[in-house]
Amino acid sequence: MPRIVFFSIKGGVGRSTALAATAWSLAQAGKRVLVLDLDLESPGLSSALLPPERQPMYGITDWLVEDLVGNGDVVLDSMVATSNLSHDGEIHVVPAHGAEHGEYIAKLGRVWMPKLHADGRRETWSARLERLLQALEARVRPDVVLIDSRSGIDEIASACITDMGANLILLFALEGEQTWNGYRMLFEQWQRAGVAEQIRERLQVVGAVVPELDRVEYLEGLREHSYEVFGVTLYDDIAPATPDTVGPKEVDGKRTWQVGSLVEGWNFDEADEGAPHHPWAVNWHRSFAGLRSLQGRLAVIDTQEVKAIFGPLLEGVNHVAEVTRQA
Image (cartoon, rainbow, N blue to C red; front, side, top):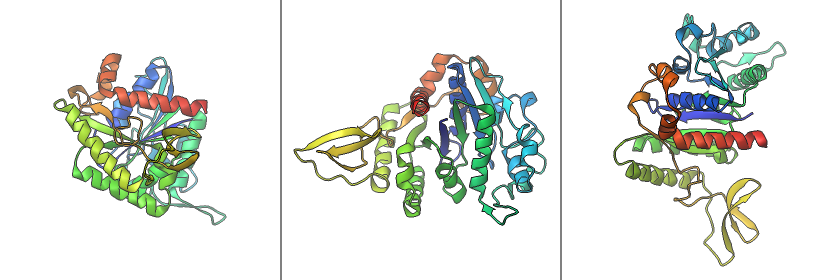
């Protein structure tokens, strides 16, 4: 089943709001959606999808702490709640913490610890998280899994991207030097770690909260700087064009550049709308400016209004989800 990670270098870019709207749209289309709030240091996604009375007893943090002492199964069945926003489909939400969060800060100090098994085997926190995700998928049987990742460029945030087996990794970006310096450092770290080629074809830039004024110019600048960063870090160098150059093609389901019968590398033109650096725009809208008010807003929202704000993102997610499930 397809897993889609929502990630950003910095917080406050509307990433969690976009995830909530995506879950709502997929449920409107009859999909069974599993949503995980892995932004443990800044939780809040569940409040957008669940009213207070529907919050489950436990959350991801509780499981990660209890699993260290072999009690993970005790909380597993009490950490998933069904959103009241589900319509033709279903939205199953796993929050960062339960209704009674208790000593949450103290718990955060232990969630990223490895687990030492009785046989001496040491299980990393990312392996434990993958085990939790598989258990939740087995229980919910979703059509698609949406994961709200921790933001930043540290080891934990990077592992949420590289170790979760995501089919699509959405990189939310604001136009600005801070954003692209951060993504450049992250991509370069993936190169040093030897994982860049494994995940680069699953990346997609999302133009976050695109302003109402000068949208075209804003997106052009975003695309230009995105292309620059991808070009120097993730894209392959392409040999100069020759008479045998055929152009962009799909080889084994992957977009590439082909010269005669030889595949020269993985690269895209700056203007290629199918390229991972070409941003899917999410337009800024006053009614989607905060998570706390989103629960009531989604309960009365019009489908066309959601498409007007999140259209390219919703289309892209739907396409990847369908292709992955068919494969």
